[in-house]
Image (cartoon, rainbow, N blue to C red; front, top):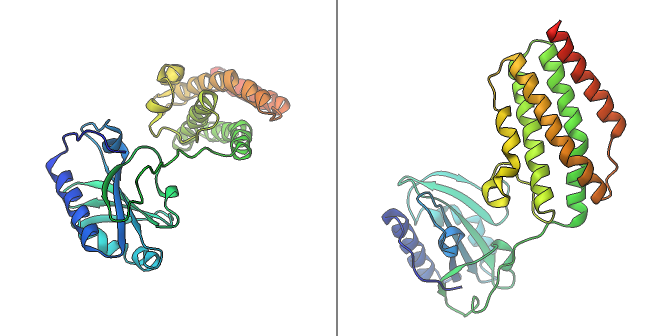
Length: 274
């Protein structure tokens, strides 16, 4: 995909120019492209640099093994991690440029990126008409995710109540955050069941955030009374989402578990008032 150029910060343009030059000079590399917000034309003041390259099949394994050295041709890295990815290396350079480098081979490269791309180099015409599809999570995986959220919410609530009852506010506050995150992921699934539930990451782009407005009141001081009220709000939010989602997607909703946990929460609140 070739779109009109947009203005980039100078240090980003330097890194991209170095990337193109390094790919051009490396006989193992046959194509390179730019992804992310720069390719979509939506870059703001805080973009990262999403780089992709394709090697020959014969050179792929060796290039992958030495990709850290390739990154050093773009600038001095102060952070380099693959986080277990077989194809992507995440980096932060000394000039502040943050980005990622995804690598594929001639015979298999469409899995290394998703969405629009901007061709930077194409020695063999591999990228002519290429499309990088957005991955959709398999239905069975989404149902398993929903099952986990529906059931583990109550398990997390149990830990919250235990922590609060024991007078351990730090633990209780951590559990409150887990419960809130469960609700955010349920809201994401309600809005688009085929997309990954990824917590707060880019949640403003994933769904209308007014759907989460009730949760704003749950960002409270780590004080027992405030946390208990926040938990009640979170439970109500969950109850508005989870039963319908479960019924829609064939997950058995844990009615008995809900009754036990809500009863415990009510007794905890009464104990604090007495």
